[in-house]
Image 1 (cartoon, helix red, strand yellow):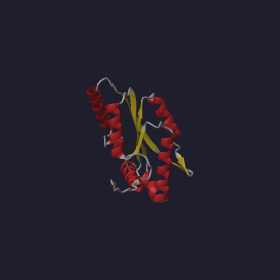
Image 2 (cartoon, rainbow, N blue to C red):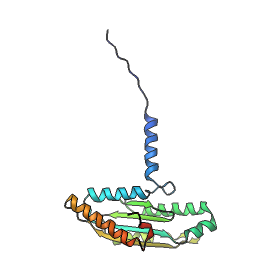
Image 3 (cartoon, rainbow, N blue to C red):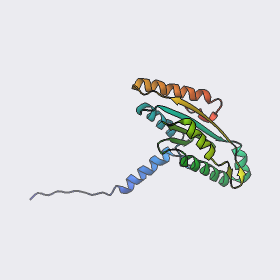
Image 4 (cartoon, helix red, strand yellow):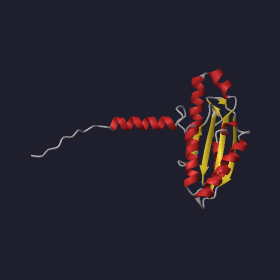
Length: 178
């Protein structure tokens, strides 16, 4: 007589926990956008591996946010940040990268699109009034041409993009992570 002994284990809950941890590692917990490090990693991966003809880096910074947060409370400030994040997500394509990279600082990286059109649409779409309060927003963008003929050339262009973004970081401190 032959037989087998085995054990079945349900690992469904464990896989769900692992997935939840991965999401928490990559996302900003308040806005549900990518965090700073995750955004950088995704931008670099896309630039190194895909055919990207045009791209643009957009930065948004809420002016005097600390004052608004202090005057109206942290719950109000959190709700405002969530609202801005929602407006950003609603006005970019699924494949573009949006991140909250600081307290009131957001970064958007758009790929293969006429950047001027989406930048203008995004700037117009972000509602600068929230619960009857006017919100001031500093914004800037840097268009990029990226050649994707060979991997080494892509890496060099990505390095140029990172250097360019680092140079404009003086005007937009929220870009200092690139």
